[in-house]
Length: 128
Image (spheres, rainbow, N blue to C red):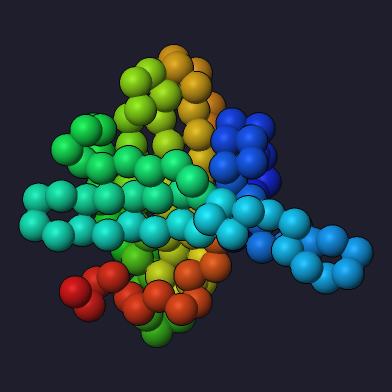
């Protein structure tokens, strides 16, 4: 994961590319991950050291299919989480194997880019 704007989470959201001069990670090991899991009616999402679940937070998701101009379409999976007045938007791009997290404070109309993460090790969620 690459944390673009970690001021919201401070040390709770780190980047795998944050390294010391000696090449060691300079981020907390539990701050560089992102995950979405679903079982039955419960969905859980983690971003760095933060986490949400569908039993406590309002969540909505949608899958959009986009024409890539090639032989196949790309699924864009969007998951929106309401955390009190704030909103987090997770987007997973299945062909590009990359994800993006944006954040919107209160009633603001604009989302701010929070993090980008590599999904190359994740199997296509539509195969579930």
